[in-house]
Image (cartoon, helix red, strand yellow):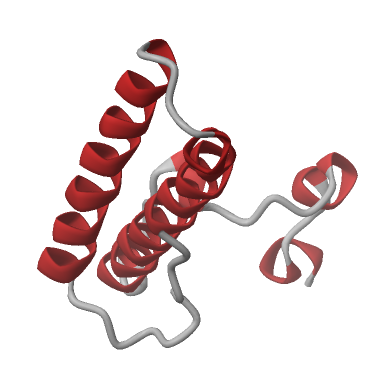
Length: 99
């Protein structure tokens, strides 16, 4: 159930397949919990949930990275892809306005 998502060479299909397998495993573990399964199975629920979270994190990071690449040359970007910085810095004059 423990997933290694360190190496970034997973394709989207691989990650989605892995996510589907983990969710199925989690479902069977939850059924085992209701029917009074072994303690080992109950303890495994935690690790499977964390593995699902890891896979989803990698999927979301890749998606955001691709969006950043797509909007890199554009003049207008979605708000969630813009630089955060601090409010005062965002309100300050741009180098062009300063000159």
